[in-house]
Length: 431
Image 1 (cartoon, rainbow, N blue to C red):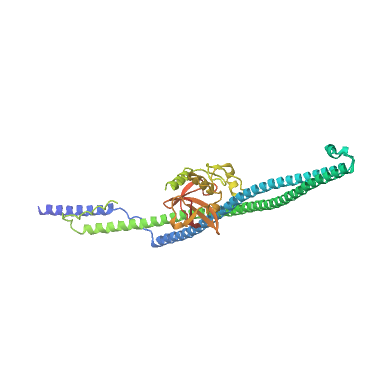
Image 2: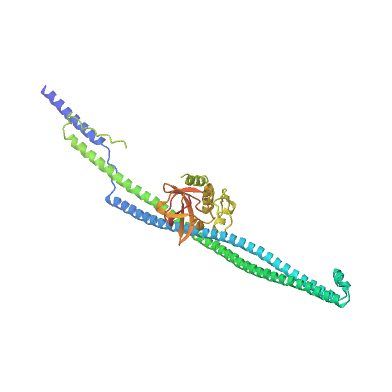
């Protein structure tokens, strides 16, 4: 009996040892544990990439700011061209009126000169005929046909009276001719001035078009440079994401290894402690808490055109119109072949809702109503942007720090947040 009990105890010890050994062998192998050098190198690479992305982000921001400035310059030049076009049309109209007046004055002066020439010829013929045979002066012979001295005296008196009357009339005609000649001279001078204004306006239009083309070229160049910076930034961001992924992967491996090590240590410690009692568990954490009628008419009229293409020179009180040639930016975008609005054309259409008439130039529109401080702007006011003191863009404020505008060639009528860069410090209120 004693031997049998000994064999059972030994067998039990052997089985326990075998089970413990089997448990140790069954434990999972440790996960990869990257070295500190590997972790340090990956973090350094990620930091370098992050620095590059930061630098490129700053460069892109500067490039975009410069691009915005160049866009404002293009808008300024295009509005200068718009103003020059309006001034040229006015000069052409003035020259046409002056020419018509000068032609009329010249015709009147020429007619007066002809009348005087004809009158002089009549006086000369009368005087010559009166001193010839009495029968050769037509109806006068009925009065001075006698040959006696009394009749001759009466004839001479009648001749003097008629001659004096015709000479008086001739003097009056001379005065009229002089006045008409003076009017002709004045009209010709006015025509010369009008022609000079027209030539100056035409030169200003050409200069504005040339300046617009230069500004657009600068903007295009800056846009290309900005696009290249954006591409470099995108590439750097991809490299940064890859480096950060590497850091995360290595850090994840290190954390997985630490978790495995902690679990192994906890298992080893548990084998050396008695089983836990049946005491109450920890309380569960509480669940988190669950996470003016006139102004409106103007605004509605402008908002009705959302999505209409931008067309330089386009738009009037009746709606969108075909754009016009500018010889530069607008032509490059085909504005002359589009039906739409430019910034000032949209304002003309919007304010026609309340019977207000505006010129087709933002600079003139800025003075078309009462100016109020920008901080006091209200829906229905016009907002303006300027560069170097020259207004180049206008938009309609609709409230909520938003505006409706026809921004630039290649775009459409849209609603946008108010841009405060380059904005003029007042709003123009027509209502």
